[in-house]
Length: 290
Image 1 (cartoon, rainbow, N blue to C red):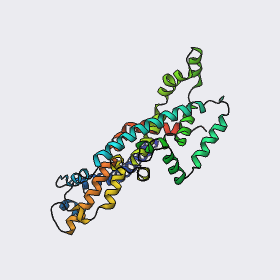
Image 2 (cartoon, rainbow, N blue to C red):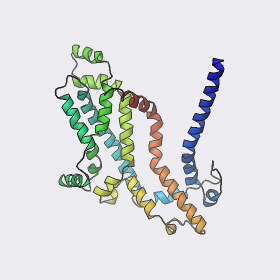
Image 3 (spheres, one colour):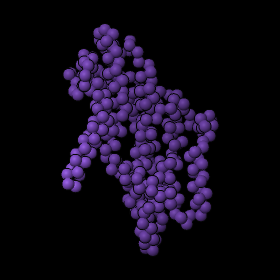
Image 4 (cartoon, rainbow, N blue to C red):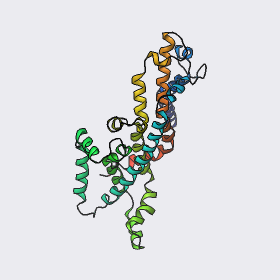
């Protein structure tokens, strides 16, 4: 009887998870299909699981947009360097804060928490960036967010869960704290490092507001800024690829919007499955200890 109940529960559980997964995945697949569909195929009512005819006219328009290539490269450069700096500084700060015998540890922690909840605001930040000579400089998109307090707290809590005996044994053997960090702590902290790196990468990849404020040279702007300008600037006259009536034009506009979405989120979606197992483990363990 118990096995029968468990079997029914497992079946219903799998059915519910499958329906939920379908509800999550279908909008993404619909956008993908729409980006490769022609006007006639996209105008057909119903569920679109496969394009009637594969066309790339929407992507041709997107990649013909001015400065799109340089913006893509700038975004990749920003994401790689910015993520590396965030992980680096997060480790350097979280490791000593995880030591209960660190002098003034609570005061340092309180200092970081205050900085996380209260900031100077947009105007003082702009004046600071200007005084540092970083206006119209790619570093203005990277340096202000190089220290992320929330990530520091998460990593600090994770490091506090590690076995202290490993570090004590290394100290007895003559290892220094820097060697312990690189040889012991970092290999054991892959889940939380992957979590922090994923947060940082997604944040840098999707950011556009700071580029709008600090960057003036179009060759230094980022992809999301170009995508925003493209979507805002799109009108019916800009999306006529060789004729057709108003219906064809409107559908082509939706095709272009779908293509911009796929182009902007594609790299992150490709990276996420490889970091997912570390992401789940890192966020769960890092939230246990305060």
